[in-house]
Length: 350
Ligand code: MRU
Image 1: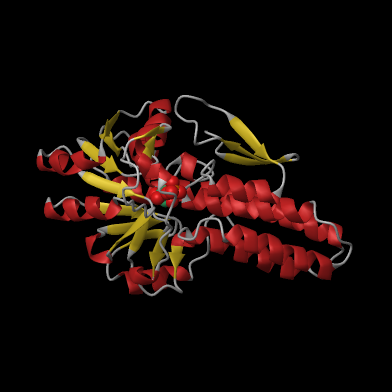
Image 2: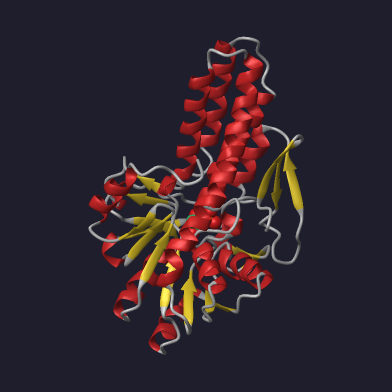
């Protein structure tokens, strides 16, 4: 399995996603500040991977923090969590992971500080294992929904590289393919960071899953020609009513899918569902550097001074979503009720 991120005694080790697919290089973040920077600069990306990375960053920062008293450690925890929470605002898994680490600290706070430090490292490692288990469960639940032949479209990268392993949308694709289905995957290029053409294509090719890269503006034509039997994507945040924030361009794909009568599936762990956000209009959308749009492989491709927009995500209203595949089961509309029903089910892998 691709090692997107891993805890080591020296720090958190990442495959550098900025360099793929032409260079497979690894970097180790040895301080929590370096971990936060790796999230910001997209060395590591994808909502579940961001969450577990943040947890490992907190564990690393706490392991190496000065302080012999719980009160000193708590002050440090506040600072570290503050820095982590400012890295990428849309992926709710980030805030979920921070909360889980804070809760763990509270549970351990009567113990000697050495045990608190160790307990936080163990909690982050547990989250890593649970993430892979959740993805495999999503795969089992979602595999039957995909067609046996034809094409399956995905947007961005919701694969092993966006998680601790196996992937959400690509986990469903992997599981369906492993079960003997013979579709091919269409990977949207996903401008401007090219997660589809660089990352999704790279990891599916490694697994021998037939993959065709298309530029973002080709998906409508492919649907019209009958080449796409289903769409499956990941999510950065799902509001309580089922509205889905995901990589910019997802909304257009969802609208096109509806127009062509093609099912549009979202695969995401329960930690991506944000019960505190009532609908998609309340989801904060990260704005990224204009340079991602003005430059391509280091070369300027727009005129000097032109205005640029670069929202990293968009929101697909729940009415376009055929089903949400989670590790706890498959949710169908009305999502508000379906989400609340599964919210109390025991988490997978714990
Ligand atoms: O900006 P990115 O690359 O972090 O965006 C990633 C996505 O939009 C993914 O689809 C989403 O995080 C789900 S990953 C399992």
